[in-house]
Image 1 (cartoon, helix red, strand yellow):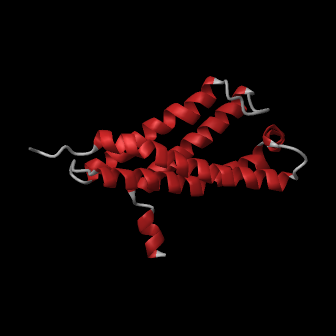
Image 2 (spheres, one colour):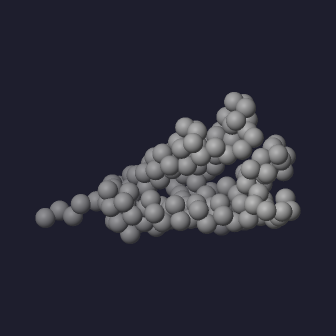
Image 3 (tube, helix red, strand yellow):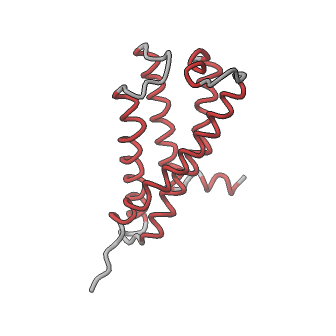
Length: 155
């Protein structure tokens, strides 16, 4: 129990939770705006949520780690931090969608359904895809951000 409590205090956990809060807010905005019948990849909300906001949050998360380390961050430390943000986000965010699909807007499942798969399988595939996409996003975003934020060696 004590181990799990210390994980919640980690920088990467905090920033993954920030991404989760943003996910909840984006889903709420979809619901309140009436754009909750399907996921529209052309909408500005979708573009911001999928592409712009993650870059900002990963940058802030890795920068926060650098500040924790008294402004001394190696490329490797930045990579690890960014990857951990993606891993924790990938392990937690699918449950937000599970709740959204089962309790808030079951009808939207049809917009992600391919073929005649039962709803439980559609949701399960989406949750697994979410985990993989979040982790891969961390692997893609971390190198350039870690490179940008790494401490320069003094000559």
